[in-house]
Length: 429
Image (tube, rainbow, N blue to C red; front, side, top):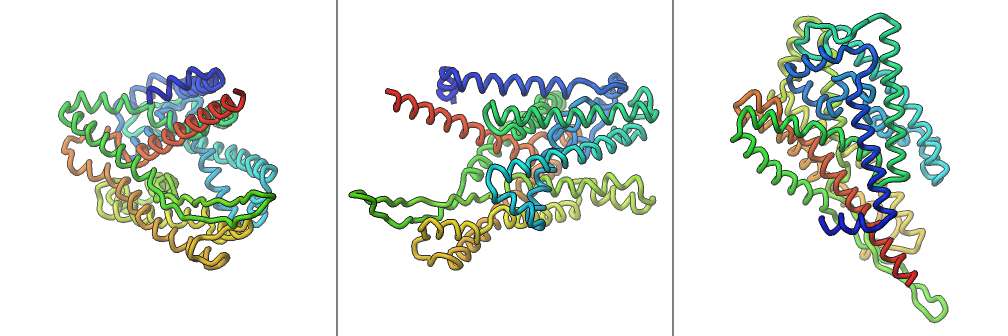
């Protein structure tokens, strides 16, 4: 790793991209710490220091602490990520979007524009929900003081517009990183959100129980190593292309289709967390009996019903997302179009059936891997008897997947650019 960093900073162009990316990340964090106008930041910090719980900790982790602080960048990258996922899902049922996806760069530009519009709409809904919860006192559990200096219509409208503008600015910053920096901009920003709260969680655990801190660090290192191993695992389906005689030379190649074990990535966990988050949000609007049932069964992560629903939803979303992002028929048609074939498999429908079979065999362990990884914090809650340590447990499945996935992808892109630079230097020589 040290060798890669040395090579990065020796290359002027790549060094500029890395410094530009770091500058955008610093600006993003400043926006997450800057409170929106009309927010009583003293009361907010006091209430955040005394609040804790499963839902509270999840929101705190995924937003980098910005949403509960009602900052300018409170919404972070979640509206854009949600809009991107929704557009991927709609492309399956709307022929127009599917046609645009196949048009290449021009079609992708239009889909990106639609995604931006959807991001603004989702940002308005999210900001309105957050501000409404702040006005009614349900944003931070156990906080009796008002979080807003003025809860009038004009003041609330200003806060909502500020958060929506902040979400648009975050979307722009992410696109800047993708165009001029290193790695995927939105992925790096959500990586920043998750990593930003880790020092605070770890320091709280160390103060509460140094022994639990050491055990958790060791377990976390093993967990990260295991996640890296699985995320790198893939099934390589061999593909051979027919040899062609051009002039006096014969052209042909053998390649492969890389099919990852975790083909769905982090999306099923995000979908499941969001879906199980809805009953908790709706609980205050229900009757006393329904609210008590939701708080008993769907709020505590250690309840058997919650854990069962968690596992089943993750598995279902994993199969669903893989089915819409990897089309065996299109891949088989592309292979046949360019004169390729899978050894031992006839081109066309037999190839598509074979790819679908391999994909289903890979998705099963991938879904099980996601479910086990997501359940690890719940198992840790049962093992760690200290309530304070439970509430500040940082090594959740979502956070580990985000950190490892984004880290691996960024390192791969840096290495690819370093290799490209070496080839260019060789050609110039």
